[in-house]
Image (cartoon, rainbow, N blue to C red; front, side):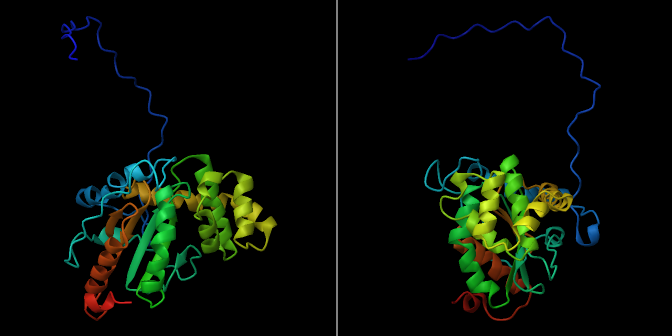
Length: 283
């Protein structure tokens, strides 16, 4: 049934309020930092490309998201067959390649680095961790072609922050990836990430010194590390999780394995790692 048209409203005679001179209480975000702590200056064109990280995965990153309900993951990313297409040198500099980084897996000098920005409360981050990441590790990391560097990017509030600091604290005792697996196990997200729950995850992950874990998770160093990762993600234009960079090529959302394979193969070809992409893709 169509409704009757409404008469046009007369413009209000009340003058518009003058803008407040009071500055915003929200602090400006610091720029992303490159190697050595220097500010990473990202050109407007690169930021526009990096915004794909936020846009394409937005619907997959609500706190109550679920891979089995409320819609599917973001549409597959467009990954060009051109090894140089879609990759940006400024974004590639975000790979830290720190040999003793406990939140990374793979050789520090691997030809391809995939930077992963994720939140433990993100259901599609969990889907990627369970369904895709193990295969990438088996297929590329174990043979030295790929390095995966984790970045804590908590965007869903206090529990996200607690889980992020817990992951960092577990890493201090060499158990980050075990904590990562426990936090992303089926059903783990539904139990939440309150302080006691995060301590239980650390125990499940085999963190040997519970006292040290308790001190580390609440330390200024833990908070600084998480903030560093957050500032980096926001600085490049990411607003949601999961978000990835593969040698400077943005990929948004929990994409199918084929999207990551194509991006990695293109990056390997561009890096001159040898072998035809079709041959390197074989298992």
